[in-house]
Amino acid sequence: MRRERMDIDALHERGRQRIETLVAELAIDGEVAETAAAIFTRTYTEETQQGRSVDAVAAAAIHVACKIERVPVTAATIAEVAEIEESHLLRRSKWVQSAIDQPIDAFDPAPFIDEYCDALKLSDDTRTLAHNVVTVGIDQGIASGKSPAGFAAAAVYYAAMLQDEQCTQDDVHEVSGVSKITIRNRYQEQAEVVGDVT
Image (tube, rainbow, N blue to C red; front, side):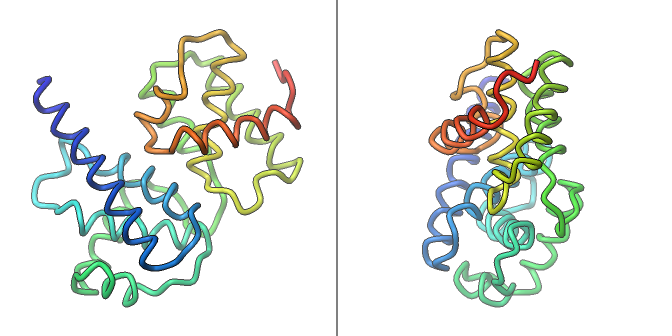
């Protein structure tokens, strides 16, 4: 069991590195990389990895992330840079979109909050508070242009801290794929406008 866990962690790291490489080659916004990494970590699991290559799912995660972040990059461009067939990319993108079950035309951190709280086994109070942090952040205008995955990860960390739950930035990074730098930056922005919303 430990061996399987180490294997999937290694695959997640390889996927994140591939995403960073492709995003750099595509010269697109760093928020796409954060969202794509979160999507990859969420969808590429011990149960789903069979028959699906890291590279193809990483490229598909970027394609979906571009839609979520409203970054105009075509499937053909991503497929060319990733060196995979466009038809294969589109099939994998459809699977990824179905797996995350999130509308691609809306900024919606909520599914990510629930996913991270479940993985971290956080309390319902912390989950509710994280949703409240996101709601206030959106209302205050600090979510504009931000990755929903990164915004959610920061809100979960911030809410857990307010609730005195044992949850570090490392813990949130491990389950979300969002970098610790992004978690720290977003949570500090949230803290400035949200304050203690308990």
